[in-house]
Amino acid sequence: THPDVDAISFVGSTPIAKYVHETATAHGKRVQALGGAKNHAIILPDADMDNAADHLSAAAFGSAGERCMAISVAVAVGEAADAIVGRVAERAQAVKVAEGTDPDAEMGPIITAASKERMKGIVTAAAEAGAELVVDGREFTVAGKEGGNWFGPTVIDQVGTGMDAYTEEIFGPVLSVVRVETVEEAIELINSNPYGNGTAIFTSSGSNARKFHRGVHVGMIGVNVPIPVPVAYHSFGGWKNSLFGDKHIYGEEGVAFYTRAKVITQRWPEPTHASGASYNFPSN
Image (cartoon, rainbow, N blue to C red; front, top):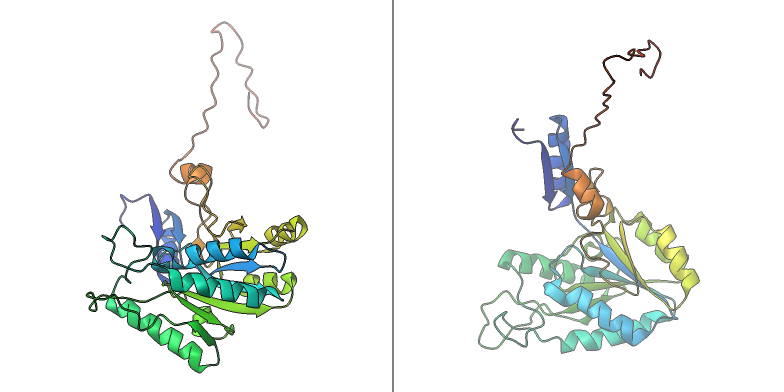
């Protein structure tokens, strides 16, 4: 609300992003406010399953899942489900979890004890509601570091869209698997989600890839790329409840956000010439 502030660029949770946008725009300020995410990756039966599993594991468990671009939902289409779940489970169990000073660490602890307990509650509730805990990281610990906020890579299969494991942005190393029968059903699932930050498809079909990236209501899309964040001269930002404001960050849109244009019209007539002024629009 301060009069010295002309623009606000914000990244955080959706409720706060919405509040920042509403409050600042009410005071005449330019705002880009990035909110939460629930990023899906579709796996079709024609995908290279080993390649998809490698990248799903890295996208779900890299940075301990504590990043807005993490893949937290795998949407397994048809017969791809059993194949991808088994492969991702193998990779989840092989992730090297250790403190960050360990040069071999692939994943570290969770940021706070409160966050760890929240994750445990969500995973437990999913299991009690009928989901299958394929890999359970709730009681994971590192020898000699038992006091740390450890939470191992977790894979939950048969997740329902009404479960907190699906609706909440867990922000941790938890991959939920939702099973559908067709790519159309998968696209509908993504579009019905309130977030639209990032998404991906794993397939060897150009036709299905095109149907996917044209059909999903998501701001950043990967084809056989799980975290679709290109270099900084491309824009970064989602749709729906993942972004409030009309300008994404980075790229040309980012430059435009921090820029206010002027239009300058000039004429330098010779003093001896008539002005040629006109009362019509436009004036000359």
